[in-house]
Image: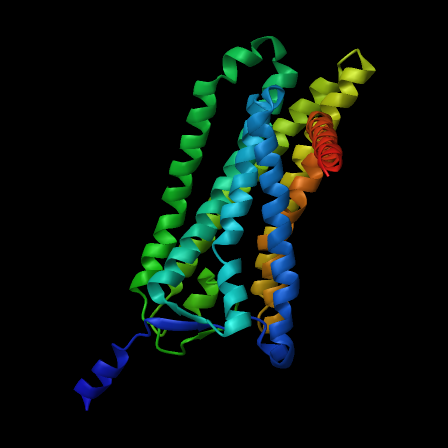
Length: 329
């Protein structure tokens, strides 16, 4: 009897079903429309601005390169889970292996931590530009930029890997159905029949070690920027500095607020339905990536003017092609 119980306890699911928004079973298929629409918007908006920054020479300064990296993170992070969910809704491809689930989880956490690092790098760039303008080219060199990106990648690997590695050793025997559209740490661990207290503590520590220092450094840097901007004599220069920093701060607040709200809602699982949890998870994972191109494309003057010039050239080119076609006919 003991041998039988021991073998039963050793059983662990290696394949799962991602079943997001379970409370609207009859209407789940229609979720393809909003998710696909948002995904197309994310790809279109972010890719256009990445291309613009790459081809326009005046936009190839450290600040705009960091913005383009942020847009790249938006594309990769959403691509790690949206196509899978769309396939699940449209042709019932809801199955995912444990390895696939862990890879998806790693991509999401890696990109979230890396995104926070890029936001910090952008704050550093603006601090140097406004508080130490004469030394800007020396401090924010290409070498510094590469260093900041590499530090962000290493930090993301260090913090994202332990959660995924430890989750791979847990035994999942409660169920094989994840009531979420994405493989999220707490959603997967809720199916574990082994002790997950250490995993929960590690996940909480990672969140604390990322959120508190990053948000503290952001507040410190932007407070220094605000103080320095107020001392600028020229009102036009002050307005430009505050506007640019305001865009960065708005994006940072959007990312952190969405993350905090999603975390709070998830921990209220006893009072909140799975559909509401899924909704706030979708807002956290997709809303900033959708809005970032609009915030920077419309809010940053240089990018906005570059987009206008590109659209005018496109109109002139298309009209010349149309006239040439008419003459030929």
